[in-house]
Image (tube, rainbow, N blue to C red; front, side, top):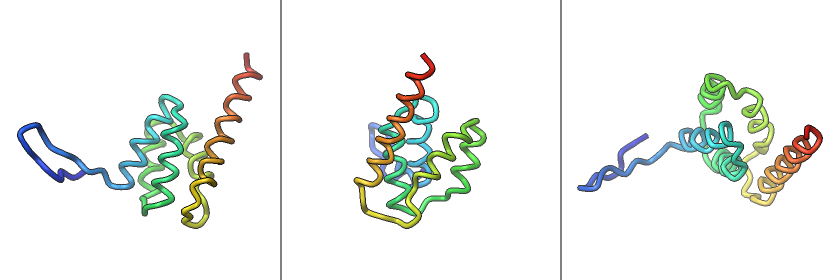
Length: 104
């Protein structure tokens, strides 16, 4: 994190792309927030992120399975195809819904 501006109301802080992905994944890991999962994918696809650091953090959070899912959904090559990423999030949402139906 980097302070980019300070004024009488406080400081504005900018997150690195890696910290941004970790922030979005935290909401996914602990609240199953699929919108945040999609945002993490978009940032990881659009910017250079430290996947080793994100993996280290995810393991510390006890979220290896969800991190693996995140890693498998990042396209092999950077792509601006947002529809691809949205489709991946949708398919993940459907698979979660199907699991909850079969376990009820």
